[in-house]
Length: 90
Image 1: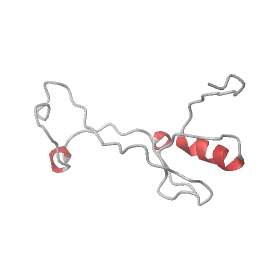
Image 2: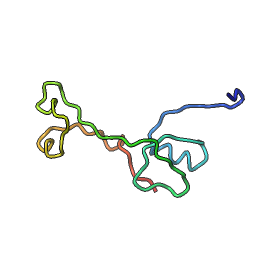
Image 3: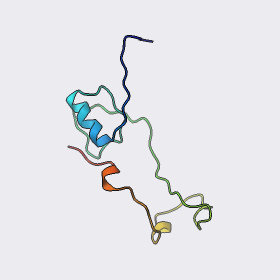
Image 4: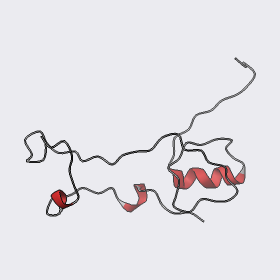
């Protein structure tokens, strides 16, 4: 270990972390990369996320092993507001 190294953890949205990286305010960030990434950043994929569908146990789709987009065509959906979704950055 390196007891003289100061480590600070902070949580924030990717859209606010990327500018801090570019400005030199952060050394490292775990982010969801925007569709267009700055050429001034080096990125490495850690893993891929899979979208999930959450339904009550009594829902008609609850016992399905997989759900297609067609299965959801007439379903009421809760979608996160625009501010909490990953956004493209220049």
